[in-house]
Length: 191
Image 1: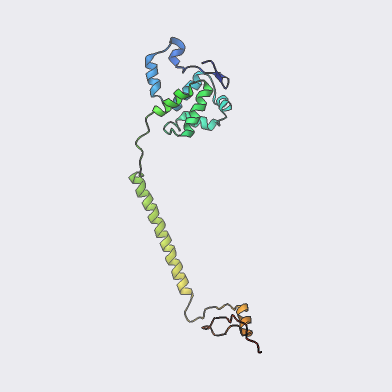
Image 2: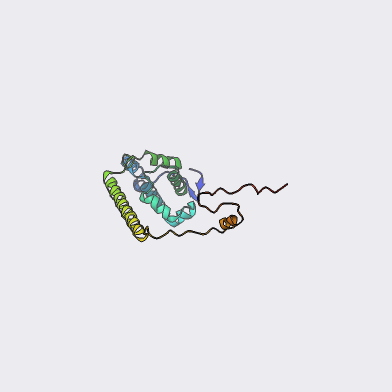
């Protein structure tokens, strides 16, 4: 209660009813069911802190704070989201441990699926089949085009190898295409 974080003293959570008529038990029950993003938004508005001021206090971009309050991180209690919630709670004067505990106590959005939904699998299968057919028709067109252009009566172009021609001139290798073994030893000189 006594320490101030970011210029805002740590105070207990406010409710609209507690401002005028003290604590109400029914207000606490509804606040416990409230998602953490909406809870932080309500607490920020009750303390009359605007998003730009909160952004300056926490050094979190305004867009990220808007996403936090809109509920984008409500059902992802990973370390990144917990850090956001903890930092915002400290900046507006809430107990960060209680606020993170509130976030962790929220029920998940639903059971996590290990496999995509069946309609997504059908869509994915249709896309893959279309890509496969497209690739197959492109390959067939390529094969038919390359097969008609090259006639067997025309000789294939042969590249002249200048190094091989020079070696043949000096007798280091034979000029017949079947005998390609180069002479590794220099010719023997007389005694």
